[in-house]
Image 1 (cartoon, helix red, strand yellow):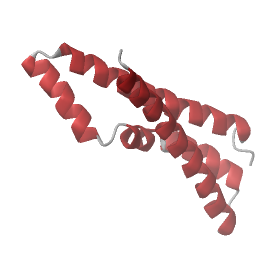
Image 2 (cartoon, helix red, strand yellow; image 1 turned 30 degrees about the vertical axis):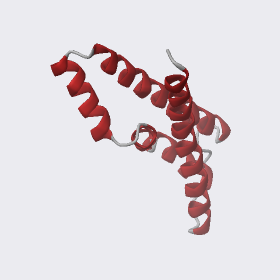
Image 3 (cartoon, helix red, strand yellow; image 1 turned 90 degrees about the vertical axis):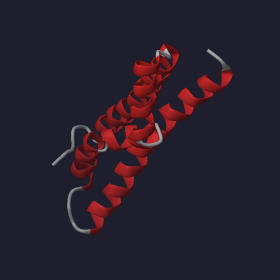
Image 4 (tube, helix red, strand yellow; image 1 turned 120 degrees about the vertical axis):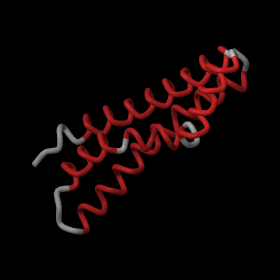
Length: 110
């Protein structure tokens, strides 16, 4: 693995992590402003933002799908492996952010 690919993996992880953390905090502020329980809303948002964190981290789904297609039909298996590892890094970041928010909110105290 070269340094550029490793740097991409780290960036993907933290972008997904940041989308979850930032989205839930801002969503919690919005919930407070409209009179809803912020911790409960933050708990729910953490789970529902996972797919969007993944999409943001890998730079859109079309690019990843076209890379997978190119790897399958043109026989460049390294592209498939790299894309799957990037998706895994982004999923790990999104899951880490979700677990952290759900731990901090203690299951959305109601």
